[in-house]
Every structure is written in C-alpha cells, then in structure tokens.
Length: 124
Image 1: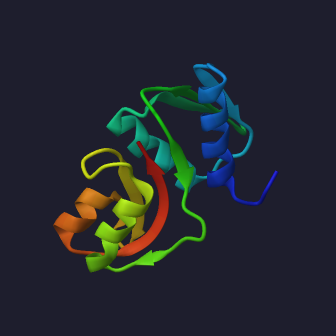
Image 2: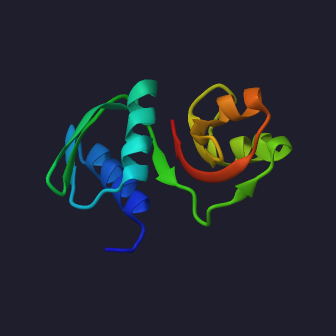
C-alpha cells in the first residue's frame, strides 16, 4: 500500500473492473478522493459511492479506464490540450480532473474559465 490514497483507490477501481466486479471497497479515503468520486459520478463513470466509518464503497459505472496523474503536473491554461492528448484517447471522450484555486474542475471547465492548475486524475 502506497502513501497516495487517490492512486490506490483508482487502481482498486480498475482492478475490480478488469476482474468483472461491480463494487469495490477502499479502506482509506480523503476529502479530495470524495470530491473526485462526486465528479466521476456526475459524469457517469461511477454509479454511486458511500462512506461507512473508514471504508468507501464504490459501485462502478460505465468506465473504460481511470488513473491518477503522477507526478502531479502543473498545467497552464494554454497547455491543457497537450495533456488531453497525452491522457485521453480522443478529444471529446473522458475528463481530466484539475485542482485549481477555484476547487476541483474538469478540463472543459478549466478551458471555459481560462485557468490552469494541477492535474489530479483522468477518467474515460
């Protein structure tokens, strides 16, 4: 088990998806991970999630791949397209989650608001 809670959780989701499971339980979670799950749920990649004590139960939705961006690249507003090409399979397929001074937002919102930030994760 590593020190990166987000990477561990997203790896568990992908391992469960590959083995054909519909649910996964993550033993450690953080507020940042919960916000990422909320964004993934809004986009349809996660069906639902709930916390019970220290466990996070996640029901997997329509997801092909997800992962944490390591190292966490700082991306300027004009370089978002470069990272879209690097982490997403097609232009209108998937989301990059970016941490900005306005909170967690998707790459689409970052382009609309003309702001940059730090890359956290990707889903498609």
